[in-house]
Length: 217
Image (cartoon, rainbow, N blue to C red):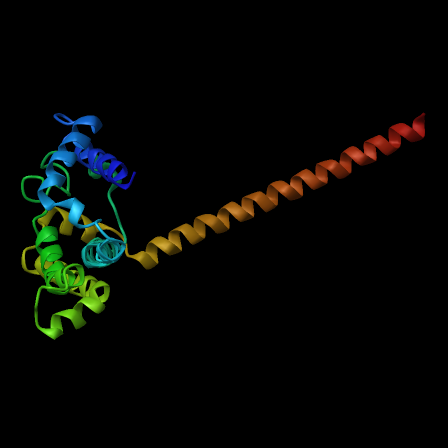
């Protein structure tokens, strides 16, 4: 069941990455054939190894999280140009180099590298590495997030993306944006209160008319 879910998830990813050539079924088949190369039966042959492998995902997910935090908070400054996310040509600000932001895999690889020796020892204790690598692996999530965070920002600083940088610089600051939405919310509240008062006054007038009509009867 786990293998089937994994193949389906990667099938979705491949179909989303290459929709012109790959659908979900083809992506699932490609994943099944490629996964044989990593000897998956050795990763699930015992409960201990299986738990070690599942716990080792932190070594790979930590750098991804570091990339996402750095991208949204520092590079994009809490902004996204949603329309350009769906533009697959150089006119979009997220096109980078031929549609590929090479800074991300470089930062991810460097963030993952420090945890790989400890990960190998955790899966296969017969392999011998320096004790320091095992200590690094015990905090692989923190080190992965930190290294990828710093490297990704540094690469964008040394090799900036001009279109993205220009768009982010042209946007108002977070404080100005929050002030704008706060003022809009205040105006909305004032408008709703005015409507409520008008409704209450109309209800009072209707009640007076009703009372007068009853008195006449």
